[in-house]
Image 1: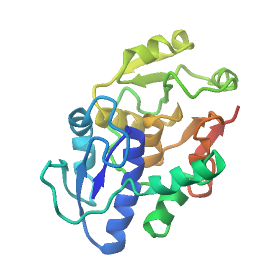
Image 2: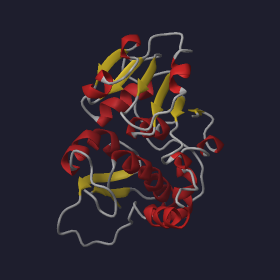
Image 3: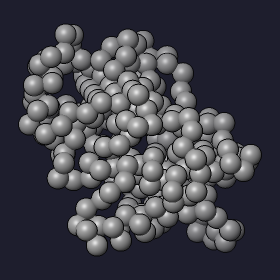
Length: 241
């Protein structure tokens, strides 16, 4: 199988990878590529591979995880195949119409069963039983403040990029946890009692592990990928604009 970026899209595509393997009672040779029928990774494929290697290679449905070699010629499943429908739908209607679970299961023809597709041990003592937040610098809505004000404890803001915390308007009411890799972020999120995020890759990790989570929606951009997931997971809620 071949998958590519951006990171959130790549993590979501692993749901299809898991379910295809379950359906065929097999394990995947998974290759990560920079822009193969998808978007290039923000920091390049080598960085994406290094950041996710420990996490992805430890999944029970993965046989091996490598960067796609330039001379690759074997038959493969393109994990970006879902983009064809998305691009056509957007072209025809100017928007999107399916949540991730439905889009992936229909594209790759598998039934929706167990929601979780990534496993990590909850071993981060800093975030254990804490509220963890991530907020990228885009895809916000005006009701986030009202929700934030209801929190009864100081949350931990998690990021790999300290600039995101610097620009977080509620940084004076939160603690910073700077992590180095996607794997470290996944462990920290898995250890929390609640994750709050917007439409970005850390929220995708929270969904992949099916932790208790709240998504800040930006209805102008891509929210239909998220609205509807509550039909398949009872651990997701939304902050609507």
